[in-house]
Length: 435
Ligand SMILES: NC(=O)c1ccc[n+]([C@@H]2O[C@H](COP(=O)([O-])OP(=O)(O)OC[C@H]3O[C@@H](n4cnc5c(N)ncnc54)[C@H](O)[C@@H]3O)[C@@H](O)[C@H]2O)c1
Image 1 (cartoon, rainbow, N blue to C red):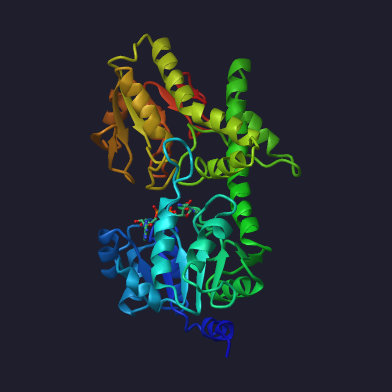
Image 2: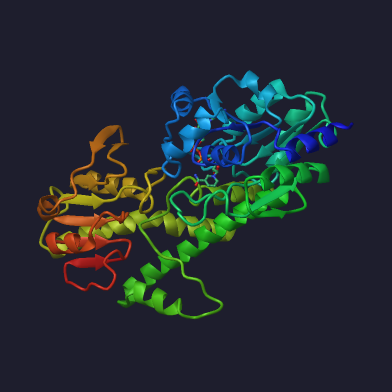
């Protein structure tokens, strides 16, 4: 029997062991989905703390509850390790490591490089490798494939390789790893087919494309689409401000058009590990081909200017109340990058906080989902969400309106409000300044 047929049978009968490299927001939910359908999963992470937490059945990812993880661990369907020699035991390996940017905004490929290097050391005949991390178009063909073929094994014959981007939206209760369609592009038809059979066990809908580079481009198009459209909504804020028009009213009314329009909403700036970062992977690659991705740079300029816009709006609002920013007490409601999540990565709230601190304001924050954080080398702790805290602030900034934050209480007890999320929708009062 050929290597392909053997692996095909193993995967079809759910006897293939899945190795997941990187047990974060993407890797852990993926591991749990496969364990739920009876696949044995070995999770690999360099973070020993995460490894021991998983082996105790404790989840550190908000969307995965420990009472969902623990039974899978107890039943032996999920275990975690930092011993990468155990990659030998896996028949299918999904790579879910971070892809951040360097300070220069160039892709930081070091995590993918290290993960692929670990696989390279253990690669054997009959393994399928799937890259899930968001990355520049061409990564699977130009970087991952040559590294793995340095072992002397041949893709499509001895081992198999695909790209399948993760689309998970942390905090989204409706669309999860399981019911979000997954795109797959393999190096060869055999690679695509094996990936399809594997993922079909745990994921409802699969979308096949002709190559890894198409699948890489799909992910970057989706996230660039969001970044550009959010930038346009943010530019509407700037334009409506000049015209004295309520941007939220305009967007809501435009959204009643049943075709040809879909609403995007402005905010204090982009955050998270995807939307502010991924488009730069695309523009970086295009720069190497002497092409300037203009929408991406314009969207980046507008979106990255929003924290400054919110800080300026705060300064002006304090001024109109006869107060200087220096010495003013500022309360930030929600430091996460969006409501109802505990993720601070790239959060614009941190940038806004830094800007106001540098102007001499006394800044506190309230966020039950993120009670502790470190900003510019200083530890900060969340204050209580109560009427006294609201009343004692000269200005309250709503940056991530978590659902426990009662809007009526905020409106009633705050002296001055900057609402960057339209959390006070439908409420008009002189002390509320919306974007
Ligand atoms: N977070 C999201 O919403 C989201 C959505 C879609 C796609 N993605 C993409 O998925 C990828 C992973 O993102 P994430 O949010 O899960 O990141 P994360 O930081 O939450 O998790 C990554 C994990 O990988 C581990 N790790 C780092 N280097 C490793 C190595 N060499 N070997 C093993 N483990 C290693 C880290 O310790 C961490 O636990 C990124 O490319 C990201 O762009 C993320």
